[in-house]
Amino acid sequence: MDHDIGGFAAEVSRNDGHAVVAVRGEVDMATAGQLWTALEAAMDGGSKVEVDLRATTFMDSTGLAVLVKAHQQMARANDAIVVREPSTAIRKILVLAGMDTLFDLRDGDGSGVPR
Image (cartoon, rainbow, N blue to C red; front, side, top):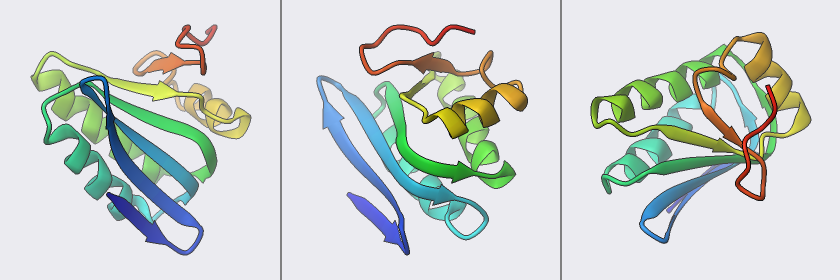
């Protein structure tokens, strides 16, 4: 499933029993709704959800709010959102917002991102 607007896209795929939401472009007020739609589709399968942010170039507070909302929804099922490969810019935003302690941040090889 692909939600594409402008340079933004959020593509949902399933891999080894979990969903991956690959996000490309800018996540802001104009695209946060599409990100939420993709996350809802990913969470609908009842499996672990990974959000791949390697191709995400910008994220504002509305994008962060969508990730928190998804995290809260997954936490009700005793599961978590994994944020995989955030770009340098996105990692900085997550750290500045204090969200590096909320999300399970992973490098491409699956290892944890140093805090």
